[in-house]
Amino acid sequence: MNVVLLFLLNGIFACCSGNSAHEATPRLLLVSFDGFRADYLKTYNLPYLQDFIKDGVLVEHVNNAFITKTFPNHYSIVTGLYEETHGIVANTMFDAATKKRFSPFSDTDPFWWDEAVPIWVTNQLQENKTSAAAMWPGTDVHIQNIVPHFFMKYNSSVSFSKRVENIVTWLNSSDPPVTFAALYWEEPDASGHKYGPEDTKNMSNVLQEVDKLIGHLVKSLKVSKLWEEINVIITSDHGMAQCSQDRLIKLDDCIEPQAYTLIDTSPVAAILPRNETYVYDHLKNCSPNHMKVYRKEEIPERYHYHYNERIQPIILVADEGWTIVHNETLHRLGDHGYDNAFPSMHPFLAAHGPAFRKGYRLKTMNIVDIYPMMCHILGLTPQPNNGSLSNAKCLLADQWCIDVAEAIGIVIGVLMVLATLTCLMIIMKNRTPSLRPFSRLQLQEEDDDPLIG
Image (tube, rainbow, N blue to C red):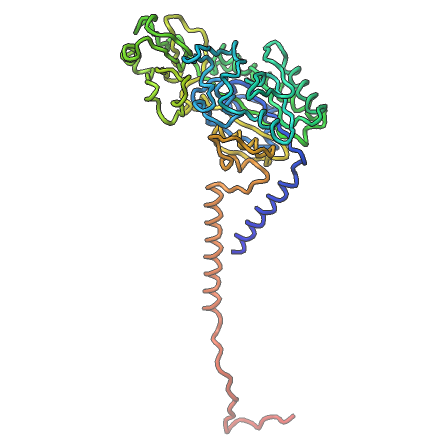
């Protein structure tokens, strides 16, 4: 019992000390390196990132949302919602009612984004706080008629250093202060598409450069005196799978292109058919060993990808490493978008700062759990979401957390202590001689007279 009480007291003390470590106004910087596959951390030497993790926390695999593409998952991170709920269901979309089209080159119409409220909007609506963003998807859009107080429109020619410089300037100079900021960088996604993740020579060079960028970010925060007070999350939207010219699914071999419109492309292709039954029947028999064909209502529940009008009537899902094309050759050696159960699609999450524990590792969490965790750090009331703070508690300094392995260890430890004490009590009882009742000494006749003092 003493051991259990000591453990509980330690947990309470940790919670109290964690609360006192927070600044009066908590601040958070969210950073995404697009396409940073989780196992790159084990495959490549990344000293700056490892130093960042050493004094913070690491989630080895983040279970991201289906489909595992850029725009949908970046919006899931900042809303805590699955794609069918927040409405950004693909990188390319078509709305049948309005005939509007969405693409990475035409993405600023609030119509597409207003089905959810991202954290930078919530942050500015509560307690007069300020948000900032450097090219995070959606931050240049008037969502709920609000944009971050500071933001940069997406421009791939703007260097990472310039983006960091702007973020640091905004964090240091605004009144009221910036409490939430988001930063986006295109690599290693662009190179992952070009070379494929199995090209270790080229990907090693790219990831070394990404690692140096992380070092530059940390150095900039230290120089600006922000490092000790700001919470930093580094994560990604998806991973990357190796593709091959030998793994192509050619739709033109199965059905004439005039029968449908391809809304979003491989490896999850969104099909708008002229005649749904006709198109479905033909595609169902198209490469059945390497591609699954679903009517919208047939999509597995675990994908959370049913209930939105922007999801097309027919969805094609290629097997890992396979590419869906009309009839062309392979145009990229790496791709993402596949089933979110594949480890190759998973990103990671690392975090550092006063809100986080030090030296803690968590095997997995869901991408929708990041949002409630960020709201907790910032003291915001979260919007309704699909995530759970309980799944992220073990990462946070102000939360008492015990995982299954620790719980089993504590129970076994307590039982062993109790068993040991019981054994000792039994042994002591058996070894202690029984006490006889006191009786007066009886002298025998032949004994000498007793001495008289």
